[in-house]
Amino acid sequence: MGRFGWAYIGSGGIAGLTASELMNGETGRVVAVWNRTKSRAEEFAKAFGAKVYDTPEEAINAEDVEGVYIAVTADKHAEYTKLCIKNHKPVLCEKPFAVNRKEAEEVIEYAKKENVYVAEAMWTWFNEPAYKYKKWVDSGKIGKIKSAKGSFCRPMIYVTDNPRLTTNEMIGGGLMDIGIYVVTYAYRLFGKPDKITCKGKVRNRVDIAEDIVFDYPGFSVQIKVAMDKIGREYFNVYGEDGAIKAPIFHAPRKIVMSGKNPDIYRNNELFYDTEFRHVAEEVREGLKESRYVPFSHTLDVMEIMDECRRQMGVKYPGE
Image (cartoon, rainbow, N blue to C red; front, side):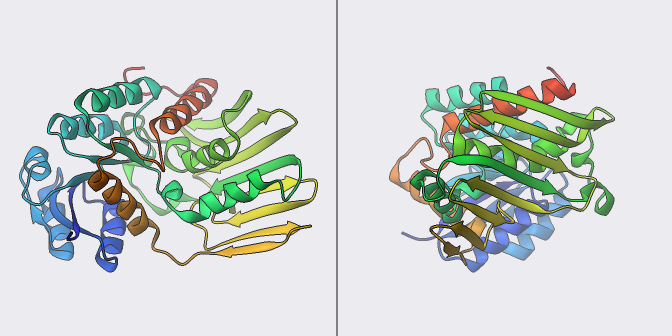
């Protein structure tokens, strides 16, 4: 079969990054695009060989479209995912999948009812490095887990004026934008925590930074997230017999295991292209739920973030 045809709903920064990798890959292509600001869609279309449409529904139903990638702000994720489901078009929706667990459940139940493939674009978990990390943890090669630490800190609010980061109505905040990567990593490695403790810095109804602790039987995971400072990005797990460390954990080129069973894993794949390739394969296979990011994982992570926001006092419109 030929390259999988994608319609893009949204043509901002993340859309451009993913489309660039599709152009350098071998399995996908952008054939249609819609953006609220048409001039931006036209620039995107010129760069990536797509056709601009006046409405999202026209783009979704355009010729050769096999799936839809939703890359608008998070407050609109559920709306456009539901539009795709209504038109029976498979969906890859950017993270966070929805505003909260309740909204995510509504979307997923609608997808099940209409028998339409839907997946959250948690691209870290469409790629092999995360699974290699989990395999090493589960193998017992570093012994009994003693602790884990994850960090994702970037001075984002000082290097960009993009309102999606700091506007409550657009589901802004560090947790939903970058914290979701650390939360998901801890969840995928260890499951739902027994206890969640979250203390955050909130400004104008949006969380700028947070310190989170997940308690598990016998150990805890300490998580640091910040949009207002330069900091390291990593996820490290420490055991009685060694440690596993991944710098730039959400897109690692190297994972290192030290201790009694030292090992190094290296990766050179295109991360976004791999994500889109896996989704295309699942859609063409006839699946309605992703093997890589199943519904239960999306819902559990939304529930964990709901609790973190509850403890920080961050509410979004309609909650």
